[in-house]
Length: 311
Image: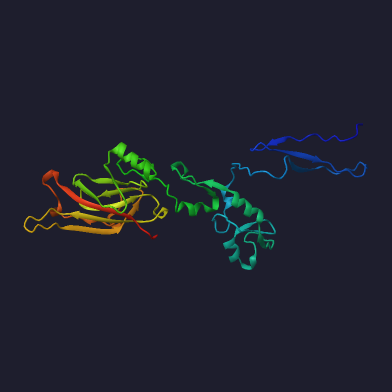
């Protein structure tokens, strides 16, 4: 019989950054008595411990990242029972009587699970609105709070039969190119004067510096309103709007009457479909229209400002 080391080399696995990890067989013997125990497999990494972090994409049941008690995403600190390994979030762990496990019948007591803390910190996902331009890549447990302030949720075209949806900038291009909506430029803090035919249902206003899109609508009904085109109002500061309607000069007195509305601009993901009870509007009476017949116009002034406070 042959004697000596008969251990074969284990397969190598190439890591994404070019490093190599090799499984090494370790055989224990019992002093030559022939009663050797089975070999234990340990991992040895080539190249030493000084290595940059490497990310991989994996798929697994996302419920493993949720607390089984409240069903919310787990975030550090995570607690685990010492009997059967059931986990709970910090909030639920603090509410369970006697610090006892919610699921097992073996009297399990909760303690910190540092390994699970590391997992939930490392489990990172792209924002659901990444295809609409959001570059954020964040911890899974932060996804809900991010979505509540993300500026990239899509806005919808409100033209009949059109199913286009996209971020405000893309929607702007679509409304101009596909539906020929009129557009004007506006600057924060400056008054824009408009002569708008009463036959025109709406006008898009685009801020020159940041490209923010607003919609002036209700022109046909003379109930004029201004909304900010964005799906998530919490994604930025609110906007205030001053809207004037100027009447023709009174021939007898020479006076020029006007109406003024001073309000906070409502946000909408579907511009043109905001319910009247949800928006401030300026009701312009017929006597304030300019011109005659089909050529009647409204003479409007619009000023939009960034508010300095969060609603």
